[in-house]
Image (tube, rainbow, N blue to C red; front, side, top):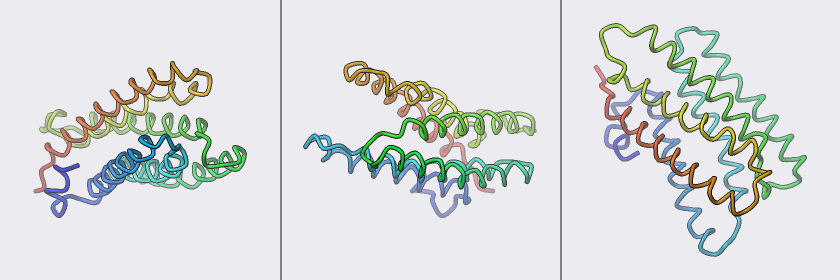
Length: 192
């Protein structure tokens, strides 16, 4: 995030959205500290952040699509996902219950979008090696994080409290790996 903030003015819309998302994620982590210290649930905050996370990442990935139809489909997916989120939150009866359904849906959709984006980037490469393409690193980071957390979210409600602690260690490792990939992507970015 710090790397992106240093070059924010030179970044395109895609990376500006990513920086905003990373800043919001960092803010959520900082805001969660007092909740954890006082043993107060922050699930409601995480449930709301889901909509921001999905929307911004979908738009970031959409900027890199060559086909207008794919770009529009990604962006238009936000509305149905938001409706599923709203319906499932109503069914849960409260924002204070973790929404495993929509988090799993987010993981699946963003993993598929990242795979398609990586495939498309690979097909369109000319003289720039993939390792120097910021879109590659960011798409790979999205894929690593969201494909890695699919099963944590899909079956998280089945795991007892002790095992859930171990599962969140895996989640943290995936999060750190993705953030390193985002940093790598931002370091590769070159504005002509």
